[in-house]
Image 1 (tube, rainbow, N blue to C red):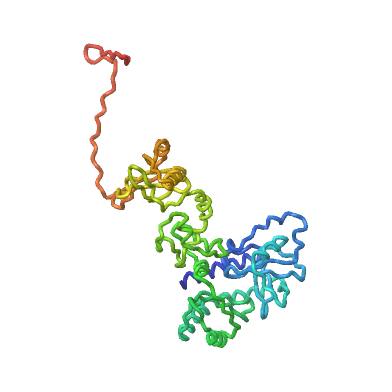
Image 2 (cartoon, rainbow, N blue to C red; image 1 turned 135 degrees about the vertical axis):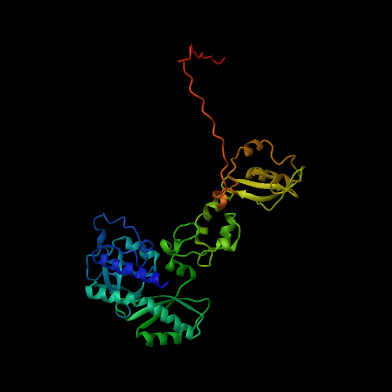
Length: 396
């Protein structure tokens, strides 16, 4: 973890120099997560809005009033008002779209007024900001030791220094309530700063650390998710996913956020579906539900006492009709009649891949195949005393 943090710090230090030249940095604060496309930037008069969106570390962004009428663009480093002192942030959005972003995100005010942008960051401000960033990792490690000595049931996951090094935010994770009043006093005396404690969840910590998910892509919480919505097992039930905790849990130990991505489509597709817990009674036997193909609108049933290999695919409209007949005390002779031919033509999407991906398949000796001897080409040249003539016979 130490070498990873140093590598990220190195990348960030390199990108701070590019920020000075007006280029936005993506190493500090995850630019993709906090990005908002300014689709009004080409419209005349769009830059007259006096409120600017500024982003900081750990997906933190806030809104400040441009009281000095500075000409700001996305990627500029600015010194903004803080409590106390000042902080350094990166301008992420300007213009009329800031008003729309303020409706979505929480705005910090002092006595009911927005905080101010003091100036563009000076070289002295940037140097002090770099020094503060370089202290964050060592401060986090030392604060963890202090919390362990005080026997507090909490984990300090990250530290964010203010731009002027007078204040630091300590992000921590805890299962229950923690009395950290003594911890704040010890941290303030040790580092000679003002201390602010902010609790985060397991999903926020996973997004801060990052990683690769089972899908092979970078974690969604580390790339673009900023607002975490609660995920329940009902999302897995709607999508007919097996309730296996090891499969459904992400790297944070909570249910995967991607369970919510397609659940609305599944709910819409199942609006007119009949209940699947009701068995279907026919003169042949009783059929019980086994599985469903939701987007094709097919239920799969098996006869009671039969092996699961004897599956019958039935469209949901046929299931409705049979359930209606059973409620009226009627039993159909067969479960499917005229619809049987249509159902049988459904393509089987299941392929048996057992053995095809065996790791030892390359160690097996190849079977020796006998090479076929090639016959000499036919010629009409004379061989010896006589001539050989080839007569072609047409196929009748």
